[in-house]
Image 1 (cartoon, each protein chain N blue to C red):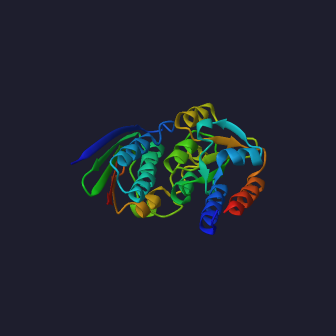
Image 2 (image 1 turned 90 degrees about the vertical axis):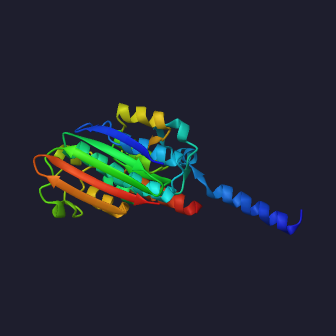
Length: 138
Length: 132
């Protein structure tokens, strides 16, 4: 049995940042998914959601839950990531000063996603956008 | 009352005393409650001090009091996602209106103190670690 959730995220809309993660967390709890897995997924998904808000024009998040796996696909329209390897480094961020003032942009988003997902894949086309895929097994 | 029952009772009472609720912290440290009053009975099991949101997302633990100077609504979103006990703003900072709104919506308290981060963290550490 598959449960699928879809969210549209507007770039720059920090007021709504976290809505997709919060809604997904609720559904996963209702599905009685292992709380440890839910905790990891919440961290990774929130970071991905904030990345869309902080760096892109808009994006779409799709979360699919099957019997033993959660699949999250985060696809955005934006500047893309010029150097993915560098973006994965802790402390590296391309966030604007305004974003950093709010406490975002510490350069820990992608590293947090990598730490918390069972598998993370990032592909990007500069000038077009980025697709992030994460899986969580339970 | 026989010994076994007495001991059981003693353990039970000690356990209850070990738990600290947000409301108790508010009283003992004279904290302001800006919003999220519904959550004042939330249990406190630790603390975390940080103004970097990814740091909190990655490293704070459920039940922590989060001490910060960030006043925007994302602090409540994070506190809610991580199931932190509450958010505590330092140096007499006030939460933004939409922070107050979301805090009341989700029932996660936003508290305040006139103390600096250093001072309040020191007191919190004593209170929380002392109880445990």
